[in-house]
Image (cartoon, rainbow over all chains, first blue to last red; front, side, top):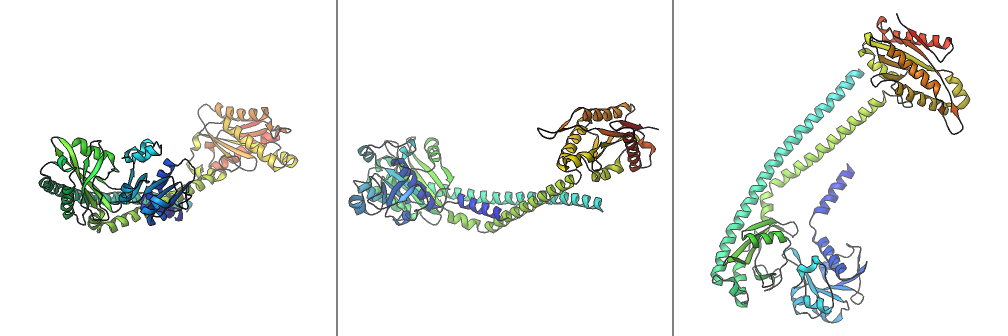
Length: 137
Length: 382
């Protein structure tokens, strides 16, 4: 009986829409697409993304100086202080006005949005897989 | 009493099964009603979305002077359109926005009636989560919708293409909130929860019944067999004795010669191996419908059908005797044991008042075989 209850609860948990887990999975997908490492060092100053820490084992949340990839909210951090090679903005406006952000990952209308700048891909000499092509502009 | 218990248990399983099937039928009927109701709610909501979309499209046409294309690069019209779309925003239509297709085929926001926090920028790239739905709207130029599984607090997304000169220039999107649906379903949710719980309890009860049935059957089956030789035991003999056709039955009583010496000399483990091996030979020498029973320690009983030609019973007896005499039993690499059996056969079972008496006669014939030198068959016939 107890096992059945645990299975039912686990299934409910697995099949329920959980924004935090979706965010963590998307971050991991982007990180592993760009960084060829088993464990990717990431940095974020976004409150909602900080909560994803620990949800994906292959992501190591670190400082802005040691990060391979960063998901940033603050314009200053994007443009000046963050040393990560790949920077994603968590706001569309910052992404549009930034010279360093390679793309944007933000939550809008209850859904995740990913946009990647083709000029930055060229600049950094990055080729993305087929599944990422639809996000490039 | 035991018979009563056996039949009452069987009856219990049958009744439980009928109750389970009945409950399942009841559950599926409830579910079907529930599904119909949900479908109705769904249709009502889609219908509302359709009407709203038509109304909004008419308004858009008034704003853009019937040409989406001309407004795409006009920033001033975007504000007007967004404001107009925002008038239709409510608890039901959570997000209303207009997407256009740029020269490269990418989807971009043309106007957005959402709140400041959720509002997309003019020309912002839009990536649909359900691409096939969007393809449908673009290619078939018809209104389409899909239930939302991957968005927070959204139930349904409705797409209404705006066609100009036979080409889809833009798509009006209405994201319908789960709020309305939840309001509609408020009364149904407890019923659905009850039904799910009911089915769960039912499944558990049925599982327990099946488990009980299986254990009972296993126990019942085990009680009929000898655990060492896997032959039937005396309990089985007792069970079938009343149903046997005494007129067409022959009884063979078999005993392993000098088995006590085997046990004394080599130990009980070796004795057990001998018993197992001999039992296998009994099974090999008999037919499937013959009943081979371990009657006592090293005593075995075979009940076989008697036909007009009684020779086949004697053939069975001889096959058994000869096969056991012929092959030695391999205990391990160093030890092989040769044993023999004595057999008493009763071919005239019908002349006895009971099976016990007929068995007793076969036992007497077995004793005679032992007395006459063992490894032989003695037959009784009227």
